[in-house]
Length: 102
View 1 (cartoon, rainbow, N blue to C red):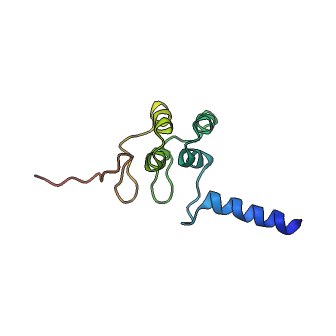
View 2 (tube, rainbow, N blue to C red):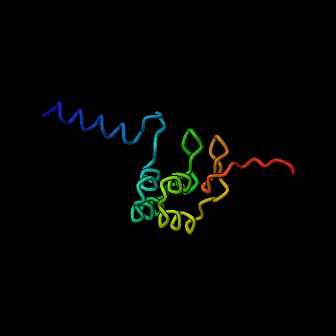
View 3 (cartoon, rainbow, N blue to C red):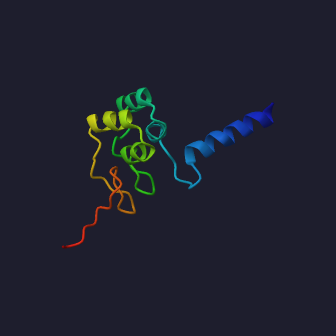
């Protein structure tokens, strides 16, 4: 029984930390899975709508990458920065923040 609890705890930690070793907050997880009630709850509890992972991803970038339209709407209504860029320059719209003169 203790072995099962340890295994369950390890699985939970992998879910929260992810394969990259980058910890996700509960808001990030809700955004990842399109959990609109969860997103609302975590924002109300004070989670930062523009918080970033080590890779610079925001909840909006994550929800956008997963195609969760309603989650995107809720995050934008809560003040998510649509222009925020991750460490590679990607935004929620999937474009790089860099432009070339032209």
